[in-house]
Amino acid sequence: MTLSPRSGFVLWLVLAGIGLALFFTGEYRDLPLPLGWVGMFLFVAAVWFSVAQLHAVPPSDQEAQVAPGEWQAWVGVAFAGAVIVALVLKAEMFLPQLPIHRNPEIGAAGKSIGTLFVAWLVLAHVLKQRWAGRVQADERDARIELVAGQWARAAAAGGVVVIAVLLGFSDTERLREFSYPFIAQMLMLALLGGLWVEQLVAAVLYWRDRKE
Image (cartoon, rainbow, N blue to C red; front, side, top):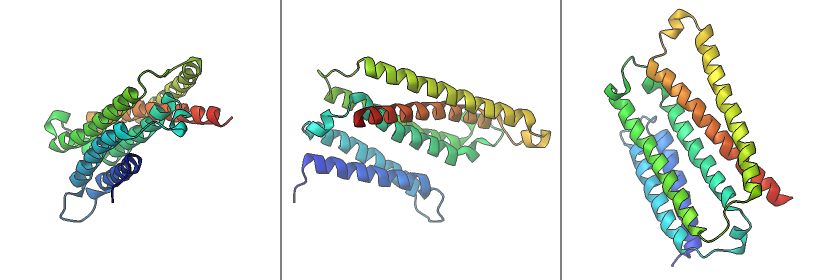
């Protein structure tokens, strides 16, 4: 039985989701198996094969109804959300009072998170190539980008304010538990939260505009 390019693309996306699930939960199970690394390998392989299938899938009328900006926004929601979840789950690794480059656990976590970013960039680039020769941005896209950017700045600023309040009103003993790498991690999460909000707002605005 031979799968069509479109069915193959969906299948590889499902496998990518399974890989992410293993990546997020595998390292926290009491099993003598490197499920976290297995999940990351499966995710990366699935993304690459999804890219290959995406080239083979002929454009459809349904796909043409969705603006390139909306496709990119939904992809951004998924990947930015995955990075945020990964950082939250690995936040405890930043608590030791050690520089990041001297903490081997952080180095391993950083490689995994970096792989997510690379997979995101590759898929975004392939999508742009798929729409080559098609108008990818107009006045509507500029308006949505402006509104989404305003939400992103508000979300990032709100995250920084929460961190400042947390540090400013914490007792001295509590502050000693927060290492500088951990504080840096919280600031990075605030920025990534703003990015995720930007992608989500853009995707919702595109979707709502398409349904009207």
